[in-house]
Length: 331
Image (cartoon, rainbow, N blue to C red; front, side, top):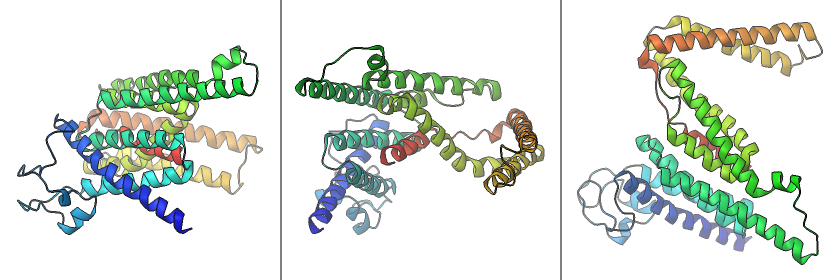
């Protein structure tokens, strides 16, 4: 037990140190500086930092969140990214153990954190980071395929290149995931032109989806995107409702609230078996009412967005996809 705790502590500290480096990558990518040179410096006074100013989390605590030289506040981003990286690396190690997979998911997690960091901070997704995701996914698929074929060779198992093998091997799955990610996100993004005359998602989100497809394959990608939408809705709803109240768009707000309440009631009635698919007539009527209310609510929302452009609060979808991908990695 003591040895396990020591190993987990080592992994956590390693994650903290990598998180410190990821902070540099995020900030210097945004400022278009080299991630290697010059040495770490205060972003305010530009004074080079001493080594003891760069100890993950601890330096922030000891310096009380202020620069040791100019006393300007240090962004809370630094300890958050470091802690998050340490926790994620530890959780992934606990799942995958000492294996090649662990190194792969650590690399993927690091890129995820950088993508989410730039997207949250400046609503920017850099193509290079998404290309790395695609490259990692394809590389992993190739390595797994080579290992599988090699094992079959050494065990004397005959290998036949059939239609099933062509459609179900890791490389094909990864390629299909890339295509699915691009198609799904581009179709969804371009529906925004019908609502507000602009894309619903940025082009960077399409590249993120392609990277996720390369890593997880098209089947898991669909689950991740669905979960990502759910996470996005949970975060976005309070802001959206606040905007409706502020603009006094009571029609849109009322239609949306009625739809949500009916959906909750419909689910509750099914959960407590008051109505079931066996009670076909009642179930069908309730389902149709739910669909009609949903359509009416969407019409009012789209109309409200046209009439009140100030309610078009843009929230990057990338972090929600990344959060869903982390859940997929762990679960």
